[in-house]
Amino acid sequence: MTMFKSLKRSVLAASLLVASPLALANLHFLVPGGPGGGWDTTARGVGEAMVKAGIEDNASFQNMSGGGGGRAIAYLIESGTKKGDMLMVNSTPIVLRALSGKIPYSYRDLTPVASMIADYGAFVVRNDSPFKTWQDVIDAMKKDPGSVKVAGGSARGSMDHLVAAQAVKAAGLDGRRLRYIPYDAGGKAKAGLLSGEVNLLSTGLSEALEVANGGQARILAVTSAETLPDYPAIPTLKSLGYDMEFVNWRGFFATPDLPADKLAEYTEKLRKLQQTPEWEAVRARNGWLNLFQEKEAFIKSLEQQEAQLRIVMKELGFIRG
Image 1: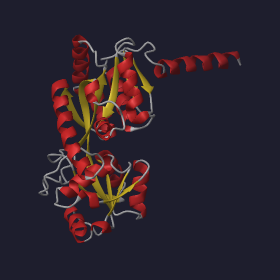
Image 2 (image 1 turned 60 degrees about the vertical axis):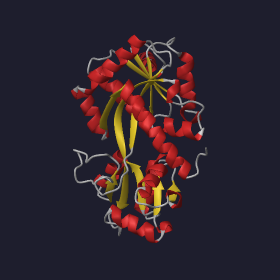
Image 3 (image 1 turned 90 degrees about the vertical axis):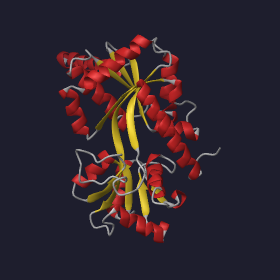
Image 4 (image 1 turned 135 degrees about the horizontal axis):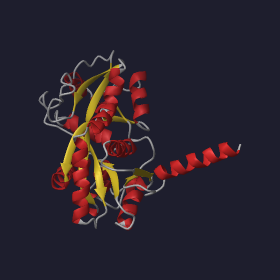
């Protein structure tokens, strides 16, 4: 019994090294959402690969949900550099939520360090769908916009909705007339498609591949600028003649008062990580695409995406002015 209690204490202590902020860790990852989501998976994947590749001795992780990511951003700003090396993972929602006013911060309140991966938008139908191509979907919407029910794993005005709205807008349709059906997370949206509740699913490529590889669905198009080397059979909207592209990046941010030498250190570690077999194993396992951009290129991409999303959100009536 004494041995069991000792073992239990040892296991608890070991778990605290991973879960508690900065406990004996060289690099601490702040995740603005709960366990298991895209942010969490990305942070833990990067930390895992860094340690296995010998770039870091240890990594720790802290999940901080709340305020649509605003709570974690405020924590990062307030903490500054006082709590050691800390990187926060984020993605397109930091732009969307700032535009919509759902968080009082934007990427400009932080130090963008680097983007790491890309997950493009994808449009999926069931295997038995009468829509064999993306053009079939557009033709049906031109006849009757309400005849095509489009599912997404997020609320109206969120990413899945806006990506689909941009796609139909590129075909000359009014994105405001898109019949969007919101589901609580991607899993339920996929279930809605497979059950026949909806005709089309707007989601990320990694989730689309999951359902397509299961043999139950087909991917009609993806929103990458060019054909994806790993998936050459999937047409891009651009290859089909529609001037639309979209990428849901995921990357890392630091405190706004980050010293230049720390920025250079973080950047070098993330750049070095990209070249390792340990990172390639994590990337391939998750179906991610590399999108490494250092600070200046990252900021330029953020500015371009912000301008693009502002136009779409105004057209859909989600923001004014």
